[in-house]
Length: 327
Image (cartoon, rainbow, N blue to C red):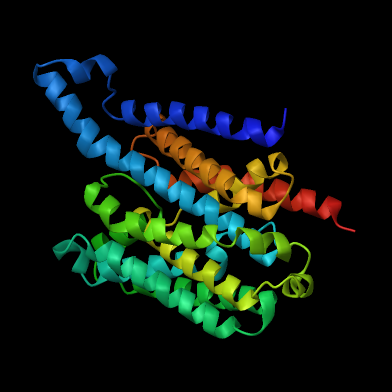
């Protein structure tokens, strides 16, 4: 049987199991029978399910799928297996926008200010990256992204350094560590449309990425407009990852790891890797979110911290494998 034909059912089963776990586990463990009782415990269970667990689950799905899909697109676009959404400065830009919302107190007065400014920061970072790297090829784009990412990270550090009081610094640091805790439907409705539009733009790059695997000159000879492909990839990443980062904080390594988990099952063809990577990213995000609720270390473990702890060994292994396979 074709391994790709098996991949989607397996991913679907894993996602279904994780969806159920995400709805039932947490500080208060729920039982399915509770949802059908008419007493106070049943009412409380339904309230927790609809107002706490469901929006958190939907955001985990959206953020994970966004990171997985954008990671697959950027790895195909740059032909770099170590590429991920933070490569182009989008994540750092979104983080800077959200940090500014917290720093100036806007987020405390207007709930939507944090994700909105985070999205604006991502768009600014994308614009800078594309402007600096335009016309210089993929390498110039990567270097521009690294420069923009360093600039945004420096400005975030400056905001932390100049935080008006320890409580503001703690709030900034806590948000930067990444979490889906205390998220509501407001964040879903605000970030969801941008993630959907961004992912749709990224999906249009599939055929061009297959041609790019032969090289930029060969892709152009096949009729691929490289500038258009880069613009689609950058705009889609900025919209999708910017919105995701704005509501969840910085989540590391999901965009890097998700494509590599499914790449052997799709014949290493970039265009066929996109949607499996999105499903893989959603599964990884749900798994990490469930793990942070199940692992009891006192305060709830931050999602970004957990993904970094799990993703770093994978990153080391990937670097060692690439070094061994290098000519």
